[in-house]
Image (cartoon, rainbow, N blue to C red; front, side, top):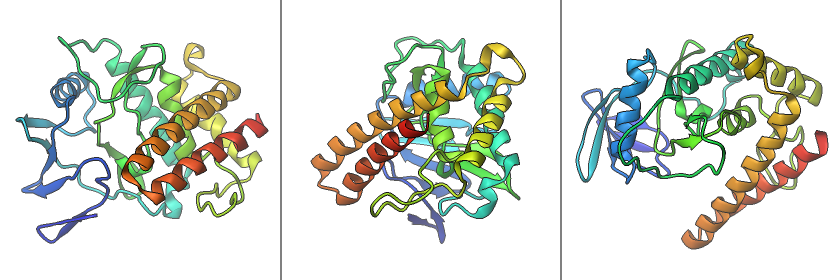
Length: 254
């Protein structure tokens, strides 16, 4: 949580955003030039709910600021079915807009190790989304964008927004789903149907989604554990354990 000009910006685990004159200033990464080209490409395809890339140099990038509410503490309205379908539709729009993205010598800060179908956001989760009056209005934090499969990108979003998590806490884990398995399955169906836009080619099955969520959580657990051990961060070590336990739980309900 960062205080800027009397205003608090939340987040910033991997980057430290500051806000001034309705512009967001962030540290550049090795992928910044590529991401700015990607955002411009998506904008040209009609995606108007992402930041405008303004400028960057060796140290700082500048983006437009998206006003609204970012749900970090997961208020009850986040679980509204309207939110779930809006997020699925927006993700489909993003994917379709990035199918033909090309740039010279692209550099990415992440690898999905999946088939290159689209450019994945890789962190399309509530804490990176902006809402107004309970409606989706924006997405930010594109640092982890990278080529990959649609289902790979969908899997983490489904994990966070459905959410596909245990219905009761495992050990001392705090993240659980507010829904029972029956309701969870219904929300999975809603998410997949909304993403498909009634095109059977893009209507993935529950089993396909859950298997990818498991794969994704194991990858996140491994990466988080390695990073946490290097940084000696006990909170992240616990997070790595949580992701692994959640992947085991999901495997038990397929």
